Length: 282
Image (cartoon, rainbow, N blue to C red; front, side, top):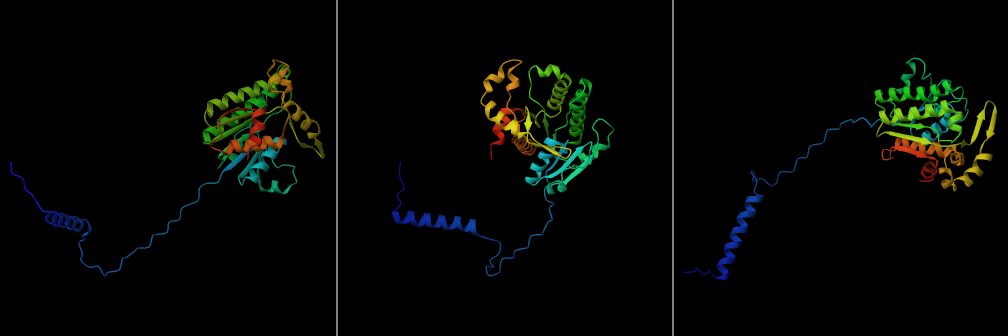
């Protein structure tokens, strides 16, 4: 079999010719005019509306815990509204002027649903004491009504300030705790991925009753320091829950606002120890 033998110079000329041909095909244009300036058209300005602001509705926002949540939410730059039977808060601090105060009763009619307009998340602090039937109605039925209405309206997240088990006291205040747990169950059904249930024990802070201010921290703060280290004892049935440490109202407010607005905050139940842990995070 014969072989073709090419000299090095011949091969070099062949590859140079092939490369020039390939580059010419890649860089060729339809026009030979190279002196024309490149024309750049100005982009059209399009007015895009800003994303909707987060709006938090606090149910029971004129109360002790609810008012602290309103204040905390304003500090985070949120638009804040409150719904309560009393309507306007008796608070005379400047921040209260930036809250939309709505008056309405969750157990009476549908006029209160106007407060849901534009709301992206809700924190409910609705609750109360009285007869067993009244406690079930205010802690359970009222919150269940709010949860269903919020779900139908498309509100994204719902945070419920419930209560920790208190052992033997559960039986004394049966309507209170049965109502709380009924509301929790409804929340799990309507908001399987957008719910957070807070279960604090005794909540302390400066609480205003009429013209008087009660410094509950005088009792609550020392107890919190002592009992937060007694978690194993709180697991003892009946008596153990009585050792649940108190918690400052500002800590509850901080966690409630974060749970309502942070999309990565995990759904579920947060007990008092979880509240203390989350409240210490920056």
